[in-house]
Image 1 (cartoon, rainbow, N blue to C red):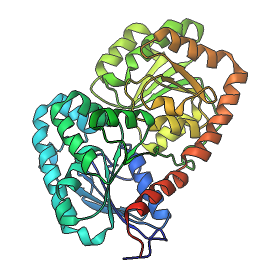
Image 2: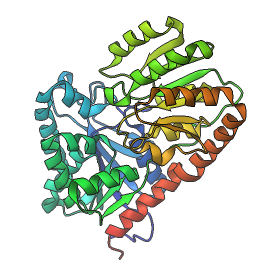
Image 3: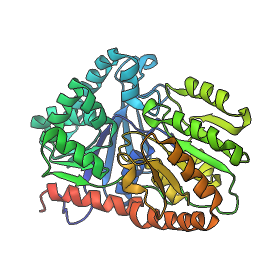
Image 4: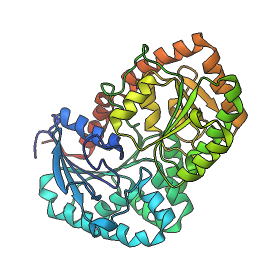
Length: 395
């Protein structure tokens, strides 16, 4: 065994969501985590879902990436949108066969390559299930990071609940990205002793402020799903638009609710005031955040909200629903929380930031400070490495 007092740990990261290519917007925080671990001295291999157009193997910034085919390429639909497997499952329950095949193939990969790594770091419970059922053959410690969609799916679905309980009880450690998720797991599996709360991080070199080129843009970034409550944002913006008619609402992302949201915006607001950008690259999102005025995330059951810390790093005050992991990030120093589904409070929050320059400037400056000092990946990856070292014997 290598000297584990150093960071020369061989890490296998397995995940059901990962960038399909460099600078893609499919869970880029998983890549950033892997890249930061490499920068700290770890040897990192990622195994993820293959998607049409992506490479089966490549190396990106020192991270070795393997993408497993689980179906003929044209039928690979588990990562079609940012919402990933939950969205695919909601659309077509027959994807269960693709999910099971991926679990099986991922298990074989772990067993076949067991001598090449010291620890398995799973992201989301489906990939972790592969590590758990093959553990008797690979005999490596398993850390599972839960991000929200997996736990929320388990709460409402018996199959995923069964799978999730097995994963929680069989992993050596569970990393919860928010306190809300930790509480949900305790309620679900009654096993609090091996739970850690370590948030996701942000690359503060990619997301940074630009106070000179600001535009009057209210921004949403995320999957276009019912859970995100973008309809509430559109309605609220429409109600206050006569007071702030020089502002625009930008909705970034794709998903099953896109057409109904476009129809709502068309009926509620002038055409030029709402822009649906579709899916954007990480670079495009970071550029847009630097130009925008505030970011709004009205989600229900948000596991963490990576987009929030990206916004903070960009100097953007944030408005979010008082729900899930959002409350771990937004406080009175950097933004405003509104009661879940309360459009009037959302409208008041937007008007407060638009009309009070002093409050806005204080929040904008503090947002960047908190992002750098609390959420930068260099800080978060150190916490993850300490969790690894707790499970790997020192020799």
